[in-house]
Structures are given as structure tokens and as C-alpha cells.
Amino acid sequence: MFTYNRVLNATELQKVQSYMALKYGIAMKQNYVLSNGTLVWDIAANAAHSKEIAALARDNVAVLYQKQAKAFHTDEVVSIASGNILAATNNDNADWVISGNISSYGFSTSGISQQQVASNRLTVGVHITRIDQKSNVSKDYDVSRSFEFAASQTIQQAEASLGDEIIRSLTDDIFNKIFSAWAD
Image 1 (tube, helix red, strand yellow):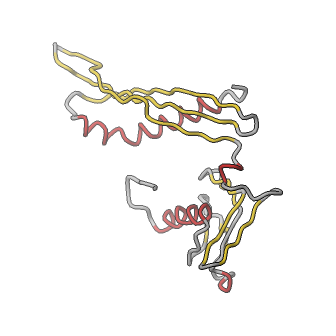
Image 2 (cartoon, one colour):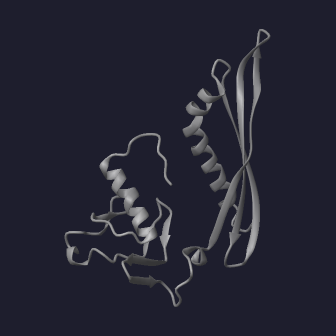
Image 3 (spheres, one colour):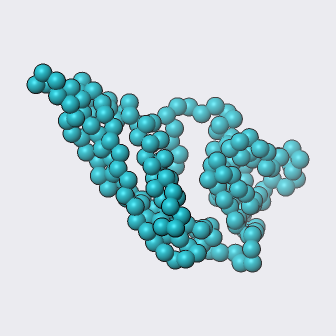
């Protein structure tokens, strides 16, 4: 499931739908485009072949690296793969498998002025596991980030106003933590 903090325009929606269609072998009656707008399948040019669409694709911006694909329509199945073998899932082709969970989520007072709470802090911790499929080595990482907000805000208001910053900051921290030291 994808969630956005606003309504997507038609071009953005087409990019998301294309991503999902390429990743999961879903036939759509529209062009397939990558996140940068590159056309990868043209419905007008391929009108006679619009029911069984399977694609190997790489979209670095959307973090899509489809090394095998299946397309399903009624009782027919089309399967393609790069390499010699069709793996059971794309995860079997992955160089890394990354999983994680929120390990801590708490609020505290961060500033006092004239014996009154002036600011609060939300601290979010994430535990990540990275499995290197090539060397069969697993490594755990922990990332934590704090976010300040005015004492006049409720917790719900703080979460709503900080949501984008929390996601952006933690995503950057997680990426940097697990990929900054390749030898780890």
C-alpha cells in the first residue's frame, strides 16, 4: 500500500500504477512509465499485445529492480527472467533483503522556560536488519532521531506537523547507516 499526504496528479498516478504493474505483472490499459517519465511500454504501439505484459525493469529512483517477471491472464502465464534460472520470488534475486520495525516511540519535555514546559521532543527509534544474500551475512542496525515541537501542540498535532520530516529524516538516516560502510 502507498500513502501520500496529498492527491496525486494524473502523471504521478500513472508512474505509481506503472511501478505496481511492472512489479506485480498487472496488465493495465495505459502506457507504462518509469519515475523519471521514460516510456517503457506504449499501449498504442502494442495494442494487439495488451493482455500479457511481463517486464524486466530497473528504475533507480523508485528502487525497482525487476530481474524476473510474470504476467497473468486467465489460464495463461508468461514468465521471463534475467540469468539462467527463474527464482521463486524476486527476493531470491535480491543482493540484500532489508527489514525493519519501529523499536521505540516516545515523548519527553525538552525545554522549560519560567517554570513552564516550552518545548517537547518526539524520539523515534528504528531497528533494521540487512541480509547480504551473496555472502549470507546478516547485520543489525539501530537508528534513532529526535524531533522538537512546541509545548502548545498536542501529540496528535505534533505528529501531523512532523510527519514528512520524520519520514524523510529517518529514511535518510537508515539508508546512510546500512549503506555507508559497505564492508560492514
